[in-house]
Length: 122
Image (cartoon, rainbow, N blue to C red; front, side):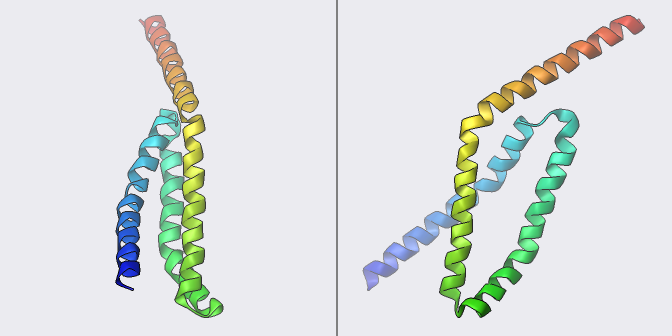
C-alpha cells in the first residue's frame, strides 16, 4: 500500500511540475506565430479563454462531482480534458516552424514596404 502511495505522489509531483510549463510555452509560441499587428487580438483571445476556464472550471468540476457521484469520476474526466489539450498542443510541433517562417516573411515584407514609403516621402 505504501508503494502505491509513493507512485501516486511521484506522478502527482511530476504532473504539477509539467503543468506549470504550458502557459509560458503557449504564450511564446503564440507570439512567434502571430503577425505583430494581430498579436493584441491573439493575446486577448488567449487570456479571455484562459480566464474563462479558471473561473468556470471549478464550478464545472463541482457540478460533475455532484452529478457523477464522487470526486474520482469528476477528476478523471477533468484529467482526460488535460490530456486532450496536451495532445493538441503536441500537434503544434508539426506546424510551428512553417508558421514562424510565414510570420518572418510577412514582417520582412512589411518592413520593405515601410522603407519604400519612407524613401518616397523624402
